[in-house]
Length: 264
Image 1 (cartoon, rainbow, N blue to C red):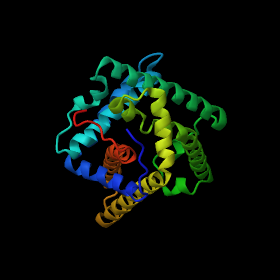
Image 2 (image 1 turned 90 degrees about the horizontal axis):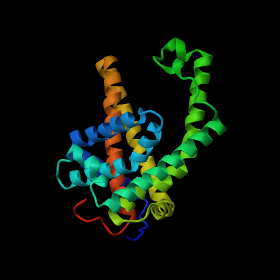
Image 3 (image 1 turned 180 degrees about the horizontal axis):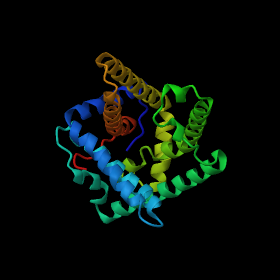
Image 4 (image 1 turned 120 degrees about the vertical axis):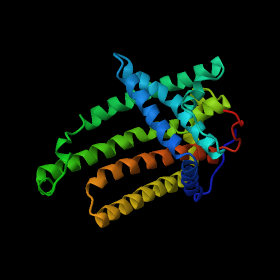
């Protein structure tokens, strides 16, 4: 496993590769993130330690989604069992990925607590549901929208270091056997050393989302079917989530020279 400095343009290639993987297995790559989200939501509803358990299982689930993208690229259909990829290895590997998950849960709880201290409670966004022309003209609605934007931006900035450290960590721990703490360090270094590539990667994802949203809006206006908008937005969100989820695998391959073994 050796760090690779990717050319900036490769960030677009990662997203493009994610889109190609999605095109090969769209049902699986939409369904698996939904299934993982449902499993984590169920875990989060358990009493006492439920939310921490959901966070702790996320790195293992991330490995499963990356393996799904790899299988889709190879022309195989990823079954739901792929989500258990990280938990179906040798006991040492399972302990390592669960330890990484525990670190993620603790860091996530700490980041959430810091967000509460610095940003306060999440703003009330009830006025932003079912927007109408009257609501948009109401200064109180605009103030709630601005408060929500400020809170979300602050939340994003506080969680950015966590995302940076854990971006490649699950893959490094699972496929390369890197101990959890070292995998966090190597992940952060990989992202920072490839910051130009990741910047272009993020901009390409935002541009794709904006273009797809614009195309959907024009289609709704041309057809004169506003009821189509809600369904279209939901489907668009699922497709974009699937493409981005698949692209994470390619970002890992782009940042490290030694590819994982053929069988995950």
